[in-house]
Amino acid sequence: MSKITGPLTGLLAAASLALMTPAVATAQSGPLRIEITDGVIEPMPYAVPDFVPESGAATEMAQQLARVVAEDLSGTGLFREIPASAHISRITSFSSPVQYADWKAINAQALITGAVSVQGDRVTVKFRVYDVFSGKELGSGLQFAGTTAGWRRMAHKVADAVYSRITGEGGYFDSRVVYVAETGPKDDRRKRLAIMDYDGANVKYLTESGSIVLAPRFSPTGDRVLYTSYETGFPRIYVLDVANVGRRELQTQGGNMAFSPRFAPDGRTVLYSLESGGNTDIYALDSATGQSRRLTDAPSIETAPSFSPDGTRVVFESDRSGSQQLYVMPVSGGEATRISFGQGRYGTPVWSPRGDMIAFTKQSKGRFHIGVMRTDGSEERLLTASFLDESPTWAPNGRVIMFTRETQGAQGQSSLYSVDISGRNLKRVRTEGGASDPSWGPLQP
Amino acid sequence: MNFSTKAALLLAGLSLAACTNPDRFDSADGYGNGAGYGAGAGAYGDGSASDPSSPAYFQQTVGDRVLFAVDQSTISAEAQYTLDGQADWLMRNTDYVSVIEGHADEQGTREYNLALGARRANAVREYLISKGVSAARLKTVSYGKERPIEICSEEACYAKNRRAVTTIAAGAMGTS
Image (cartoon, rainbow over all chains, first blue to last red; front, side, top):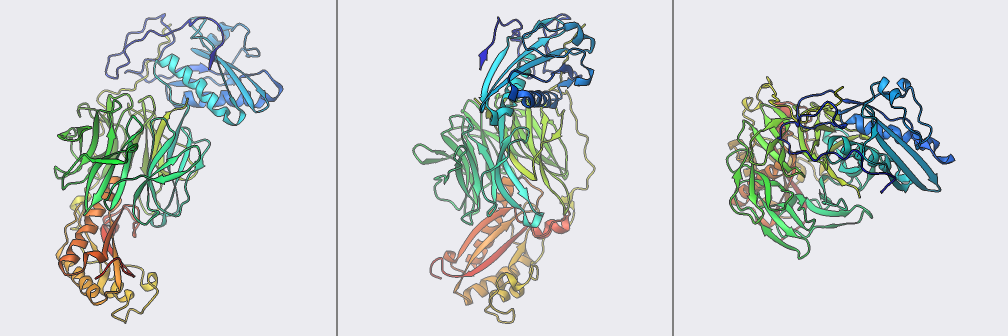
């Protein structure tokens, strides 16, 4: 990535972005800005004309890039695209001055322009963001280079930069999701691991469907995936290298079944559940030394562990109280504090990458919900409700949650959905067939 | 003109009104004797159901499965009757070893159901051992909610899916 020209003209003030901080009042003439705090729901209108092709081979890609940028931004629910049919000005040159009046006339608050050149299998993309009503550029232009095969990533990077400049939050579009792809009826379901871009593009299957695979989990850098497979007839944990799809069994120690693995923020420690004699507890494996350490030792079920992003605490589920509830303990093990107290059962807790919240599955009165709460259990909010929602995973910026939704009945199918942590913008994620157990990876480098 | 569009990633007081679905925990006791369930002898192939030493006889006449109440792994009185028959058969047919499969219905999260199925399989294993079957012949595995045999989303199906199935195969895991 490189800057094109000029100073940062629209560098945003670093307002507090803490989730619970009240909205900062925005001056009438302030910078182009969406405050992701509270209040409203009116998406910001923007225009993203076809990018300008700067080489002969780039014409088609110039259109496609703009479309993917628009899908990313509009897909957040925070932005609304003004269609090309309403545009007055055409962008025919990346460097020509912008006719602000033409964009103001159609009420485009933000304008995104871009240019692309293709040489062989190399693509270079440039873009600029304009604050139409202030009549100036927001931030400076940026340039990305990549391969033609990876052109969608460049569109995602543009959209991430735009999202980030306008909301002040990190982006999440240039990221991937590993999940379980499903085919077949409920009593003969075939499962295999798959990886895709966050928006469902570029699906690649990582395992065969001969044995059950469950709950893949990305490493913090996205280079490896932990998952559970029945390939020996018994569930064991495997670690897969994303680049070459090589895999090996994780050297957990003893026990009958090993499952529910998750990486620590250091990418080296792995938390997992080990069952022995019908009892399930949580262990931590140091993958460098091969040594496992037992973190819980109770006759109840302890499973679904997830680290805090600072690596000091672990949230997990246990039925030690008589029903499934959420607990937090120090990473060294020891005293656990119960944090869920509402009606119903709580499971699959996942710590937000921002550290401020825990997402979970709640089962109450025959319905399932995805919810979030503060890490001390306060301010519980349910975001969804359906016959069966489960297995939340956080977007890299901690603002969106993806999860599994299964429909009811003999024809029931699993799909992936995403929702804002406000409960807004619930939508299905495009996958080729059935899908479950998503794990949202980090922003790609 | 104010172009700051505030987007809400925080809805104060987002409330989901109590749902009116009947609480499935109130329906049926969930217990049952599993003898006679299953698709027939085909799965085992060898032996006729009329031969008391055949796997088909074990599956169909003795009964290869027991059922559990919601979120429980307690062996019911009816299940004890089936398991007494299983123990008796296993002690008379020492050429067979067993993997006891624990299962859960779909009304639970994936990891919890895996752990719950393990509890159920282990409860059956412990019972069979208490009746004299060698521990070395009995392994357990849990499928959680991954392998339902009934696919409706009603208690009638859930009751049959909350099961532990004693699968048998010729061979030795160890001495009996």
